[in-house]
Length: 345
Ligand code: SAM
Ligand code: DTB
Ligand code: SF4
Image 1 (cartoon, rainbow, N blue to C red):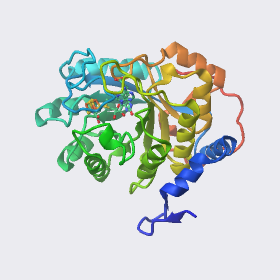
Image 2 (image 1 turned 120 degrees about the vertical axis):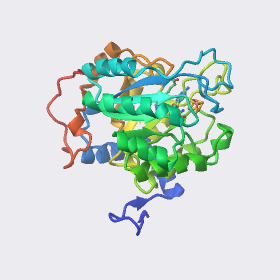
Image 3 (image 1 turned 90 degrees about the vertical axis):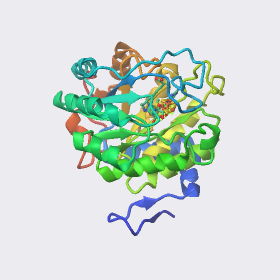
Image 4 (image 1 turned 135 degrees about the vertical axis):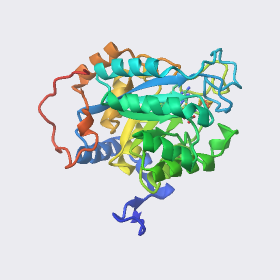
C-alpha cells in the first residue's frame, strides 16, 4: 500500500523501494498500460517538450564522474575551453527558438560556479528570457547564496542529476557525495527555481539501483518538474568506455516507472537517442516520456539531427509542446485525439 506524507499539504504519495520495485517488475504490458493511463491523466500524449542544450564552458572539469568526456581526469581527447561570450550564447539561443525549442539549457563543466563568472551567467539568463524562452542551467553544485542569485536573475530551471542510486554513487563518482547532490537540490528548491534532476542508465548499476534512484527523486519534498533519463553514451578514455549496454526494455521500464511515480513531471528521454531505434523511442514515449533534447549536439556528444527527429515525429504523430502547455491543467483527454499535424517548428 502506498501511504502519504502527512507533512505535505496534498498528502503526496511517498514511495518505498519495495512498492516502486513492484511497479517496475510487473509484466511489461501491464506496466506500459498503467504508465500510459497515468500519462493521459496529466498530459496530452501526443505532445513532447523540446529543449535545446549548449555547452557554455567545455572540458577541464575537476570532478571525476566516470562517464564524462569533460573530466580533466580522463583522457577523452576533449580540449577545454573558456566560458563563452554572452552574445555567442544568445545568437545560438535565438536559432534554437526559431527552430521550435521552448527551453534553452546551458551547461558548464564546473564543480561549482565561481563568483567572478556570475555577471556573465546572469547576462545569459536575462538574454534567454528576453528571447521569450524558458531558461535552464547546469553549473555543478550551488550553495544557498548562488541559488538565490540565479533565481533572482530569472533562471527557471536548474539541472543537477543524482545520476544513480545512493548505494551505487561511490562506484561512479568519488570527488563529491550523493549528500552533496541532495544539498544542492535543496538549495535550488528553496530559492524557488524549478528542479530538473534525473540520472543515467548504463553505469553498471542493477535494477534495484534504477528503482532506488527513482524513489529518491519521487520522494523529494516536491517531485522534480523535470526528470532526464539518460542512456550512457560510452566515451573512449573514460572508465565507463566499455560498460555493458543497457537492455532497451529495462530502459523503457525505467521511463514507465518514473511516469507512474511522478505523474506531473516531464520525463525527458535524454542522452543516448542516436543509439536508439525509432521503435525504442516510440516505446519510451508510450511509457510516458514527454520531453527530449533537440539539435545535433548535446554538450559534447551527438544527438539526432533535427531532420531525423522531424521524420520520427511525423511517423509517430507527435507535436512539439508549446510553452504555455508546460503545466497542463486540467487533465488531458483519456482517449486518442484527432490525428495531429506532425511538426517540430
Ligand atoms: N557539471 C555539471 C554537473 O555535473 O552537474 C553539469 C554538466 S553534466 C555533463 C550534466 C549531466 O550530463 C550529468 O549529470 C550526466 O547525467 C549527463 N552526462 C554526462 N556525460 C554523459 C554521458 N556520456 N552519457 C550520458 N549522460 C551523460
Ligand atoms: C542531462 O541529464 N543530460 C544532458 C543535460 N542534462 C545537461 C547532458 C547530456 C550530456 C551527454 C554527453 C555529452 O554531450 O557530453
Ligand atoms: Fe564535470 Fe559535470 Fe562532467 Fe562530472 S558530469 S565531470 S561535474 S562536467
